[in-house]
Length: 193
Image (cartoon, rainbow, N blue to C red; front, top):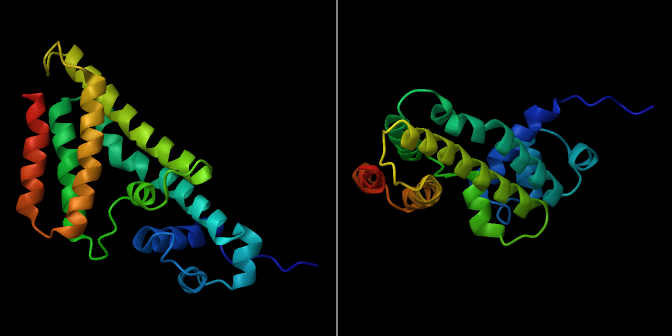
């Protein structure tokens, strides 16, 4: 009779997600994962398969747990400009307080492993598309309510903001200067004026 698992799958997956998020796929060893997850190699392989499969599961977990929270403020019914400002400010503050300088797991994976035509590439594309759609919906609402110019193009603006958010995360990994991030936010959001 097989011994029952003595761990919760999501709990150990969250720990693996943190390791991949911090170190990336290539720099993460199986020993790093075993140590962080607190399970033995046999249990890791039995539950998740190989390192690549575990990485895919960790990306899916990130997509499921982190991405919705990041853009939740854009789905409200209030003014859009302050919600977008808040999104950028929150990401800048998180970056400034992140001792591990993790950035965004989806963006990190895109930079490290894509183009990947398999599950990793699919998850990265879905994460970026979901972020773009959240921004787009909010900007359509802003245009329709008169908060931004009637001739604004919400799709182009959403893509501009998506690029800026990801670029800001990359800059924050290399430059520890809140003023730089503030200037980036101000310049990025100036397209709404």
